[in-house]
Length: 214
Image (tube, rainbow, N blue to C red):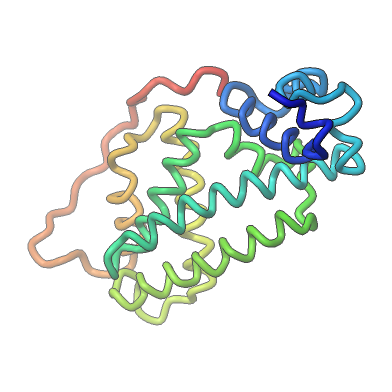
């Protein structure tokens, strides 16, 4: 196999290597030497081709965020009208559970992720537009309280999905209940559907073991 360093593919090879390693360990545990070995480049190559570590982290975050948004877009596009927002929430949580170290790099300020990086900004714009469409779909379906502030509702749903991602990953919430939980949150302030009984809260118990290394 040709060494990508000699074909001018060092940035692409380095990002692909980092994404591969993130399936096994967090970014904080990945050394430059390991990154270079997996990418098949010289030990001095990885960061140099991105200007510095911040440039590398920005490009990597953009790559991971693009993958994250694509998973939510696919779920939204496949969902029937009136269910797009909960489908996005489910995909959000599923991605976090299946790729915990990738999810961590998107939101962990300790990684020093530069939000101004062009790759990150492009993915954030896509995510914002997707979320706007999904929120409008929920509003049209009557899932949101009447006259709700859609900006506030958007942050509430985002926060709920993000919190659920951590609860499910840690084993404190069952993954199969994610959509029901989100629907319950969306309907807060609106009467329950006719004939539906209210369920009582029960003490939380761990439901699954957390992912190793998370």
